[in-house]
View 1: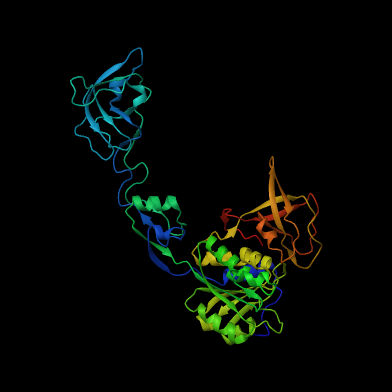
View 2 (view 1 turned 120 degrees about the vertical axis):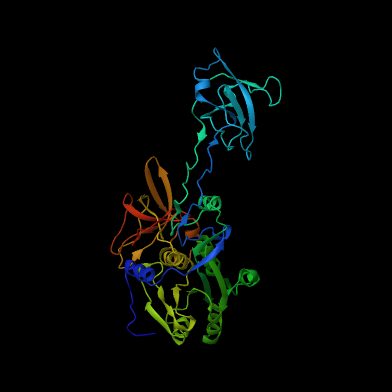
Length: 429
């Protein structure tokens, strides 16, 4: 790796370089349900009006307003029932003066009718085909109401879904009503995850942990879960041993992926081989340390030998890994998905505890939030060491304490919200 690689960037500069260093992936066509969570790549226009006909918003009786005006329990109006229109059926005839049609919700309203009297405002009427097929109207409150007009929702030719829309359940419902069995969407990245360390094992080998010989590679599980939460597919490559040969072989498994995340191994220790192996793989590194705690050992670049895919080099400590993914990696991957809102929302919270000491690094405390009346308060989630994974498990937010700042009880802290908070296009650094 080049000697002139940027080092010790500010958090804001690192975030700008990472997000600016990736682009949305190409497009693909997916079946409707498989497009859930993807970003629409083209506008979708309506081929028909929706609803396609005037239809009833109620179970009741289609009537002419002129026939029911003034109807009440004291002065009921009796109409002849000439049709019975179920949902999925169509009127057999238009309504003439003094006539009504029994109708179900969603059924087409017959010509001549301009309102639907709900069943509760009638005597429920007699069945069609009987000699006394009549209905008594006991209120005119629904006169001229309860008809959903053709095209009320969408007019034929209208652009209903815009390119760039994130497809959720409501968007898929609309797309289905427009006859779209497949949708053109931005492709979501497949991200390779590689960890290294002779001390690491998968959770299935927990007997070795109990024996005091190994620790679980929790970063692999954390990163795979964080990717899944973003709707992104993870390819967990496994754990390399502390040799260049083992790591080199493991990283070959990232071929065909759209990005690579490594955890640990980018320091200068005798057994830290990630930097050397990636240099062999023609990696162009943008930077390799950031002024942030936890998570300063954060690197970013592109791996030439893997087709120039982005590489995110994350620290090895569990909290550092999760924090740097949340703040730096997730926004970049969402941009690759075609999204424009890629940053977690923030909120100002009042500290219940003092946070850290003055430092040249930005401090990222893990916070538990609680609201009292209109004020949001923040507590530390316990001990804040970078190896204390439970400090993340208990967190609702990540605080941002700028370099050189020292926040005391009662001070305001900017909190990056976790756990499915709405995304925004405004960066937090």
